[in-house]
Image 1 (cartoon, helix red, strand yellow):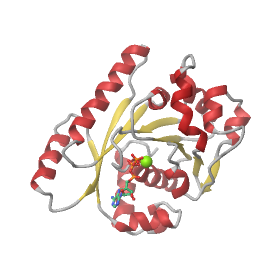
Image 2 (spheres, protein in one colour; image 1 turned 120 degrees about the vertical axis):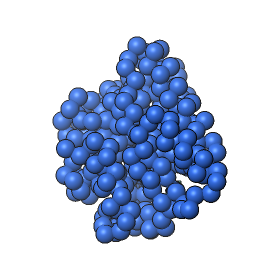
Image 3 (tube, protein in one colour; image 1 turned 120 degrees about the horizontal axis):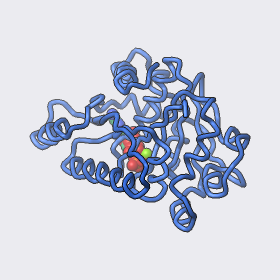
Length: 256
Ligand SMILES: Nc1ncnc2c1ncn2[C@@H]1O[C@H](COP(=O)(O)OP(=O)(O)OP(=O)(O)O)[C@@H](O)[C@H]1O
Ligand SMILES: [Mg+2]
């Protein structure tokens, strides 16, 4: 595959996966990378934050994964948000995806089979995963060459990280397929000065053997951008967080 496919994954809820996917994607598009964002979460937060309609009916990402799809179908799933930034939206039928995938053979291959049709159309594909670890997130890990892991700095973050890294290795062993490379952590919603607990967690995260690609402070402007259906680099290009997401794009190794 020439498209770099990256899963944005942490089974812990509310750690900033969707915010990071949108804004890293926006920064990559600004750098001229043809960027595809895949909303693999039935909550559809990425889809609505970018003002894209959920898909419904016969052709959705869910049906494409369950029934297979042609290259033309795969292209029809893609919606253009802005210059260089594209979205495969979520759909309500995605709530049943894990349950239905469980009874399919080679369930973990299903996302890769859909995305392979789009290989020539995009440089980077970021997959926004739902919280949790199940067969659908396995499919994201199988489709991805690498992952980035958004984390927050609360007391359960280290446990969540080691569970995730362990699960990735278990899956790789089971499928006899190499585990995706871990590009690094995005440490979200950092409040300075750090409390004693947060600072202990920060030390542990930085000592976990995974590079920290960025520390994103709490900024209400991120919610404002979301409200305007824009990425932060589009909404407030000169803000400190827009610069931070550009730096993240470079630190992630995804800028050509
Ligand atoms: N740096 C930040 N500053 C302020 N608010 C933030 C920041 N990052 C994320 N948030 C807010 O925190 C909430 C959770 O973020 P987000 O939806 O990105 O997390 P998530 O990991 O995708 O959640 P889920 O596990 O439900 O998919 C959102 O309301 C988002 O706007
Ligand atoms: Mg999310």
